[in-house]
Length: 107
Image (tube, rainbow, N blue to C red; front, side, top):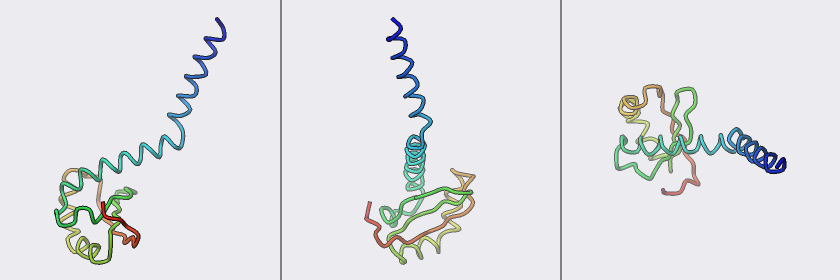
């Protein structure tokens, strides 16, 4: 009887450890950024879809990775308008940053 109790206790402890692990936090953060990307994609101009992805949200700054300097410049020129669109659904976002990644692959 005691071994069954011990086994259940071990399973519970492993589950608890996994839920509080670094990997769990990374997966949770990736899921949050993916959800944010899906929602923001609906707000941004269709011509840019697939040419950027959201890579981080730090200190109220939404960081985008873009395919090339042309896309970066196009988004940068519209950043005030884009920020207003994004801010309506995500009021904590106060700044946009666009970073070029030469190895970016079309989504």
